[in-house]
Every structure is written in C-alpha cells, then in structure tokens.
Length: 93
Image (cartoon, rainbow, N blue to C red; front, side, top):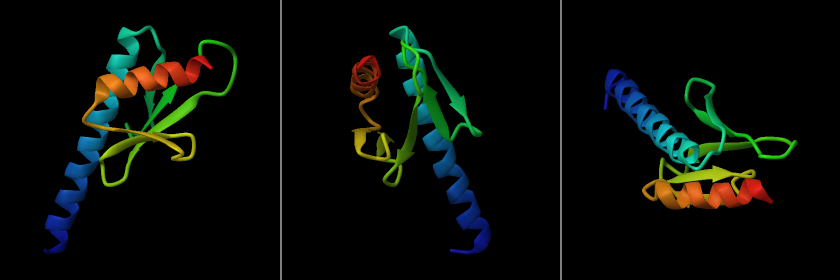
C-alpha cells in the first residue's frame, strides 16, 4: 500500500472512532449525563454528577472498544447502549 492509501485509511479509521464517540455522547446525553467531545473528537470527557474529576473515554483496541480508567474499563463499540449504561453507573459511584 502506498503512502497516500495509508494516509487515507488512517483518516477513515480516525473518523470511525470519532463517530463512535459521537454516538456515545448522544446516548449519554439522553440519560442526562454531561459529556463533551475533546481533542478533535478523539476523546470524550464525561462529567460526574458530583464534584470530582471527569472520566476520559477513548476508542481503542483497533477501534473495537470504548475504554476509560487507564484502559482498565472497556466496552464494545458496537454496543453503544450498553456502554452508556455502564458509564452512567461508573460515574455515579
């Protein structure tokens, strides 16, 4: 694969990850959870309901998982509803 094709493929992967974070943000918003996209849509900052540090969510593992808490917590990207549920519970602790 030439350099142009490699760059194009990397750009598509980055867009897929951004779209996954956008879907998760929207699901969290429907639950009343405040979350905002950061760093050119490469991270999702999820605010806790009580004062405290936010939780940063990334798409990792080749675009297969949402991950947070230094990648100790993760959930499949293809289950946005489940990821939103798990994250909402996690930040409520």
